[in-house]
Length: 130
Image (cartoon, rainbow, N blue to C red; front, side, top):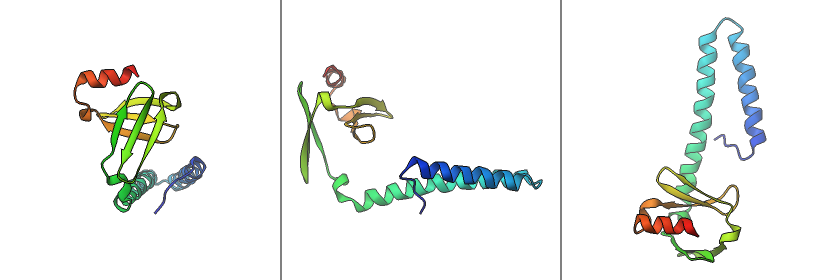
């Protein structure tokens, strides 16, 4: 499967896609060019989806229940296979996306917490006060 772990490989792949598309399109076959572009996009999206699905299915650690405890000083994350503590000053950013609160502890890795797992809207509001 094609996966892109580095932006450079994705850029090289897209440059090749554009080159092939213009070459095919320059031979008076614009429909074939569009089909190639859509095919490449499908391959990229499909590869990322299937790779992520396989990773989730084979990694039992990310399927376990995780408990988050928030206080004024830190975030405690407890799971059956271990626990972690993050101070608020070390949190990179917090975002809301599709019914989740994302807590980034660096620019790439985030904890996903369902908004519905907060006991009440007041608890969610209190979370943002930290």
